[in-house]
Structure formats: C-alpha cells, structure tokens
Image (tube, rainbow, N blue to C red; front, side):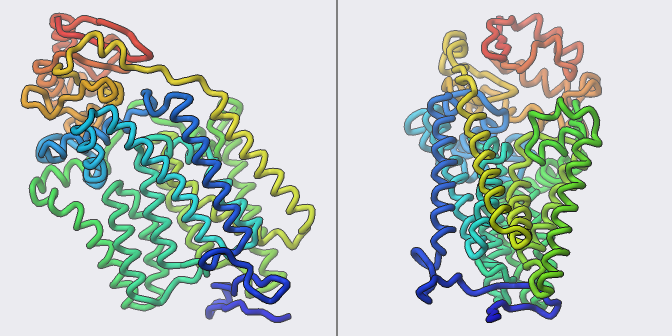
Length: 530
C-alpha cells in the first residue's frame, strides 16, 4: 500500500497528502480546498447564517431583550467613546478587549443613535459566528468528508453555539481567536509547526483572545505542551507572543488603574460566587447539548453515564485505529482538542457560576474530537456507518432549525421606557439592552452614576458575592446602591424590589419613599422617581 502519511517519533499521524481524484490530480477547489470539504463548509456556514438572521429579524432578537451581558458590553463601548475608561471610571470585571471592540459601534451610535449601533453590533456577532464555521472547516478540510460533516454540523448547530452567536457575547470571540491560533499552529495538516514565527503569531492571537475573557488562557496552556515539543525557541516565541498580545490591549488600562484592574479582573473573577449555583447535572447535560432534556434526567448519574459512554466510544475508536494501523492513531490536532475538552470542561464544572452560553467555547473542541472519532470508526462498517452518520447529522440540523423557527417572537421592551422617561433621563438597570434600544442610555453624562454592571459591582465590593443575602448587610454594597439611586431618575430590575435579596433595609426604604413601580413590561420592573 502506497502511504504518504508522515509520523513523528511516537508513531502518531501528523499529516497526509491532499486526496487525489481518479484522474491523478488533487481534488481541490480554490486554494487547496478538497471539493467535499469546501461545499460542506460553505453550506453549513450559509445555513447557520440564515437561521441566525431569521432569528434576529423575524423573531425580533436584534431588537429585543434576550441577554443581560450584551447591553453591558455595548455600554462599555459607549462609555469608552465618551472618554470614560474601565476600572478607572467604573467597575468592570472583564478584560478591556470588548470595550475596545465595541467602541466603533458606539461611535456609529453617536452619529445615528444607540439603537442602530447596538443592532449593527449584534449583526456583527452573527457574522463572527459564520466566520467561525469557515475557520473550523478549513482546519479539518483534509479529513474524510464524513469527519468534516460531523465537525461542522456539531459545532454550528449545537444549542450553545447558537446561543453564543445570536448577540454580543464573548464566547464567539474566544472561538474566533482560538481557531485562528490553531490554524496558525496546525494548518490543515494537523501537524504542530516547527516555525518560531508561526508560534509567535499564534501566541499573539491567543493573547488578544484572552484580552476579551480570561478563558482564552485554557487553549494557550494546552498549546504550551506542543510548543515545548518543537523546541525552546518555539516555546519562547509562543509565550512572548501571548504576553505581548494580552499586554498591548490591557497594559494601558492597567497602568491607569493598576490596583482596580487587578482587583476587578483577576481577584474578583477568582473569588466570585453567585446565588443560585447551577447544578452539575445541568452543566453536564448542557455541555452535551441536552439543556432542554435536563428535567428528564432524574439524577446526576444520567449525564455522567452519557459522558462515560461517549468517552468509551472515543477510547474505543483510538484502540481500533491503532489495531488496524499503529501509525494512524490520532493527530496532533486530535490530541490538542481532547486536552481542551478536558481542561475547558473541567473549568466549567468547577466554576462557581455557569450560564448556558458558556458552552459555546466548549463546542468547537468537542466537535473536533467527535469528527476524529467518526473518521477512525469509518473502516469498521463504512457503508452502513456513513449512512448512519449522515442521517444523524441531518436530524441534528433539522432539530436545531425547528428549535429556532418554532420560538415565539421576542417582544419589544422599549415602549414603556419611551413613555415613562424623557431622552435625557438617567436610568440605571440590571440589564441595559432595553435602555439602549429605547435610546435612554445616558451613563456617560456627569449627573448619572457610572454603574454599568450591577452584578460586577456587587461581586467586587461584596468580596466575591452577588445577589445573595449577605449583600443586604454588606455596608459597601448598600452604600453603592444608595449612591446609585440618589442620582437616578429610573430603575429597571428583572424582579420586583420585594424579591431582591441583595437590597437591605435602608435601600428598600429609600426606594419605597422616592420611587414607585411605574410599569411591568415583558419581565422588566420599571421604577420611576416620584
């Protein structure tokens, strides 16, 4: 048998020649794309883009209140466009990358209005999601087309990916930077490069990625092993690039407020806790894409059993492939993806807080692992297994599409705010998306309190606690609330004051004395100064 595979000293497959057609020429489209991979990638990216646009336009997601964090991140750009810096001017528990990225959209909002800037920023993140599909397809384009199909469909239509891609959330940016780093290091041969320049570039890319959210350090930790295996020079360039990429974004903000930067971005994130700890059962099911099925799992042993079965299938595929061909066990990219599944998955299970869109950063690694597993198992029963995998992926896509199309149209949350407050009003909120969409976002004005992130402020001033009963007796947290309310014309909460366990007696008394509940609109409790 004529083999062109290259192996390293441990006998691990690290690359192969492009597939060759019957006429002896490489079956490629464009610049080195094998034809099946090209069309699968293009079709998957187009399908995801159309579904997200349908969700945004027809279901009103672009004009609705659908997340808490998206208004926060766009608001950072607005404050930065008015010269107000995170950490120095207001509390911010994330690195400053997202504030810099949102600044151009905020400037568009200044020229037009914040509603337009916000909606364009949401559309930009849909584009990022589609680009991520293209990058993943390029990364695995030399695999068997069944492996490409599994990788793309699993990633693009996984519930956490769809959740992370539909508005301004950090997970899409983490995936973008990580995939660019992987492409720089592995190319499409799945070989860890020995080029120090490429390792430097990958380090810069992942350093920039970490400047959006500290989770970007997880794939960096995994890649350190591969960089070290390619020599000290590659390792030094990778580490230097990572420090440089992170530093070029964060260093100016750190120098302007070093103590606050360390406390808010590092200490608060490391020590944070949150009321309503999400169970391990939910986390395990969510990372499997079974968020809606959590209620059918009577105990944590159901998702644990599912994960054990999946792990045994992956292990079995490796053993089977090694038995068939000892030189074709797994590639460098396979090993990296499996390590990232373990590292990122463990961090999500151990984290004190978990949101359903967090899994958007886990999905690409899981997709890569499942893709490699499918390719290894194909020789076991090629015709039957190929048909089964294609049918499964088609069913997965149809279920994902139905889940989007079947949802109710998002209500417009702006009517009550338009009616209750003039454009110049100072309105503080637990979720700023409705305030931005109503063009009532005025935190940059001198008379308004600079409270962009209520949860983050409580985490920082409450020593890692937020929305908990201990906040109601914490003097600093209660002083914060009184300071915000003294300067506010309105307050938007996600629950009535009576259910706010983090509000103490003095703040509750001030609210009852100086504010009244003016409207309850689409889950928002809107209070107006009397």
